[in-house]
Each structure stands twice: as C-alpha cells, then as structure tokens.
Length: 346
Image 1 (cartoon, rainbow, N blue to C red):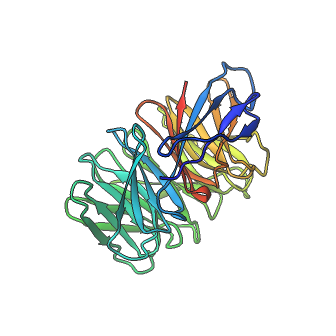
Image 2 (image 1 turned 135 degrees about the vertical axis):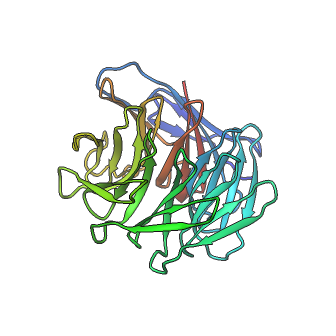
Image 3 (image 1 turned 90 degrees about the vertical axis):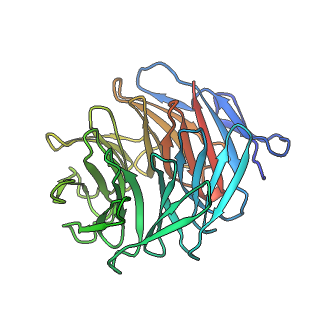
C-alpha cells in the first residue's frame, strides 16, 4: 500500500512532509486555517491513505457500521474497502467491464449497492461471497445512474444525471421505476432522504432542488433565488432542512421545504470556492471547497452561522463526495490524488 505523509505546523497554514513506515496512515492535525464568525474552535485530525490501484479515481466514499470505509474506484472498475484500524485494503473487481462505479450505499444486511455510471445499471455486491448482481435500467436513455440512497422502508432511490430521471429500485423484487424530471436538462445529481422518507435531489443543470413523492412519484421543484445557482450535492439536518453546495456561485445554501425559502452564505474561499461534497454530522454542516489548491474542508455551525476552514493535507484532488460516520467523523474521497481521508473531529 502506498501512503502519503503530511504534518501541519503554524496554525495549519504551512504543510510539510515527513516519512512514514509502509502501511501507516498519513496524519495531519492542528488548529484551523481561518475562522469566520464567533464560535468555539474545533480541532480535527486527517488520516489519509492512498488506494492500492493507481489512477483509480475514488469517486464516492461510504462509512459502514462495522467501521470500514468503502469507495468506488471509478476508473479501475472496482469497489474498495479500507480497515482504518489496520490500513488494510480489499478490492472487489466488478463483473461488468468499464462500469465506472460512481456512488455507493450499504443496505441493512451489509451488502453494498452502487451505480454503474458508464453502463446503465445498479449493482449489488455481497462482500462475504464477492458476488455482484447487476440490475439493468429499463430505459436505454437512463444510461448514467449517479448517486444512490436508501429510504427508511428499504427502497433504493437514485439520480440519473444526463438521463434526467429519478429512479427507485425495490431490492425484494428488482422492480425499477424511472420518473423524468420536469425541467429539461436538470441533471439530477446529489440525493438525500429526510426523516419521513421523502427524497430530495439537486438539479445541477439548473437552479432548482427537486423532491419526489414516494407514493405518487410526483416531482415538485423548488427554484433557488439566483438563476445562476447550480446546486450539486445535498445534506439534511434533523429539522429536515436541505443544505446544498452551490458550485457555480461559491455558496452554501439552506432550503426550508415547508416554505420554499432559501438562505445562502458566501463560502470562506469566495465566489470561486467551488463547494462540492457535503455532509452533516451532529447537525453541523461540513463541506469541501474544490476551487482552492489545496482543497479545503469547511465546517459551518448553523446555530452561530460561523465557518471554520482547514486545508486538506493531500491537496484533495477535488472531493466530490463526503459522508459522516456513526461517531460524527467524516470520510472523504480525494479523487485526483487517489486518496481516502478519515477526518476525526475533536
């Protein structure tokens, strides 16, 4: 296994390198680079690993209940599993060549479901046996399934970006429903489920956030205040507010689905911040700015409206997605540097 080593010095603004023994995780820890607003300062530790297969381009990460970290190796046609305690990786090569796995999520039995973005299917991996089952999407136009998520009833919802549809797969029967988004070229991207099982999705091709009724499959769209907004990824807090990264305008946004009102905050790196991957941990919003080099990890406290920012030691290479762990930590996929980060929040 390859590792990349970084340590932080002087308020985490100067990053240097040091040697690590083979198999160790690279670590960086220290205060934040900048704080905006008045709030208690939070410290984090970055633990970083380089995935075994070069040029894998890990796209999306997943934290499972057993403490493992999974990722999609989009350019190497595999799913990977990391044990953060030992640094050991295991790779599962997919049976359909050139699948381009994109998003992934675990079901209650620990099976890993993923989107075969380049081959138009939803896949299911049984980690115990290594068996992969493919569910081909019924419409050839739905050729690029993007992000999957389970609702509380066990249904798998997913976005199809260029196909411009929202999908639902019933794991028990394999039945797939596809619903076209009303806005042409909406490019549905990130998707989340609220506390009562209702999916919300980002329309990256326009300035809207959509939702789909699980019973009627009717889609409702919420226009955002600025026509130039391009929401990319979503997260949801316990009050069922929908948080979004406005990639095109360098904003963090909050949509209240009850009223349709949206509030936005300029990201710490400004209008060219390129906010992308986003997650919620303990009702605090975390996201990455892909515009700065190195990429940054940003913390936003909705209560105080204060930001805190850290540089990602490996550089990030564009953090396209992040998720929270059951302990309130974060897992990042650092695509351009073939990295996986576990961020421990103190």
